[in-house]
Length: 248
Ligand SMILES: Nc1ncnc2c1ncn2[C@@H]1O[C@H](COP(=O)(O)OP(=O)(O)OP(=O)(O)O)[C@@H](O)[C@H]1O
Ligand SMILES: [Mg+2]
Image 1 (tube, rainbow, N blue to C red):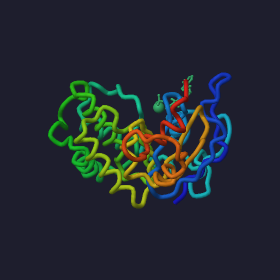
Image 2 (image 1 turned 90 degrees about the vertical axis):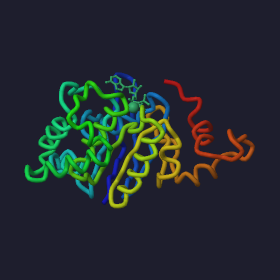
Image 3 (image 1 turned 135 degrees about the vertical axis):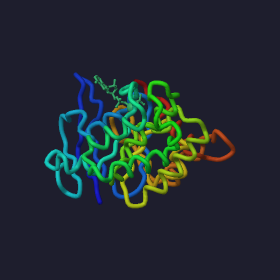
Image 4 (image 1 turned 45 degrees about the vertical axis):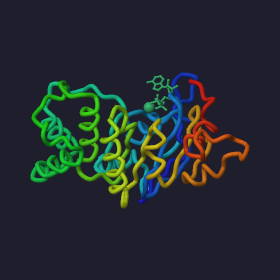
């Protein structure tokens, strides 16, 4: 399986939110790191076709996703960064609604909802209204809907924002488990979320891909005269070295 982005570009007025971005994703977890405004969500919104691109191509196993249309959406799971909709629905009814939107066959919907509620530890609150949930619970509902239908391509935009450490670790382990035969893109500001699980990390700055590599490769690329934050070099140092001076 392969998701190939070529020369992908998105402009807002004069500004290039994403600029000639090229990268090929294969099975595995990809961490997308960048400061606020670097273009992470823009890249994800282009893949999910929530935003129209100004240039470039996105090929899924060699075919343009715009041509695949519904066939691509059927293999795609997307957890958006923003929450807020459907506050009046219960968790379960929201998931049922999303499952129908995703065209999951009727006889599979009940089982799928049960599965994702268990994965995100929401089973006990499934009849509660989303509007009454804490921020972290809402976040898990968003994640649960992204998992419906076992998507082959999973796009997670800051999935752990607002989660407490226990849920964050749970989620990280789960994402790792599920990444085996899937493409997972994970945007985050929390370096420790991806340090242990990402095969490759992409560093985005002002809409451009400035560097990428495994956590080890990135750490080894640091200049020897840089002083580690802790007693040793970590991905935090990589972030500070490559991205610290980024300004929106
Ligand atoms: N709808 C929009 N209209 C105008 N400009 C936009 C729009 N969406 C994004 N931008 C701009 O595009 C750039 C990239 O934004 P994007 O949301 O992709 O960044 P990000 O890396 O996801 O940031 P964050 O870490 O804050 O989520 C920013 O300069 C932003 O202001
Ligand atoms: Mg974003």
